[in-house]
Length: 121
Image (cartoon, rainbow, N blue to C red):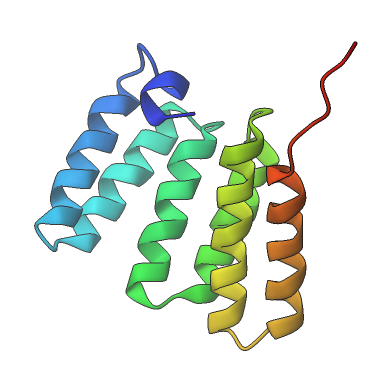
């Protein structure tokens, strides 16, 4: 799953692109403002919450990152690899908060999502 798939046709996609550009330029506060504006347009976008979680983790706000990642999971489509990546993000945030048990549980959930599914007959 990608942002362009989730946000196809939405003006939020261009705001996401602007946020990424601001982030690459090292302007995280501007990137966050773009992401927040995009969320006003597409409030059910799992991808935008994921991006905010990544940004918060980069800023050192592990608690905020975990909250946004969990929100992204609640909104996530049935896409096991995408969901597994979100659980990995939760695990990293929990590690940085000193929650080793919570991080382990999140990594286990990611591993289950990545397990090959048996083919139906």
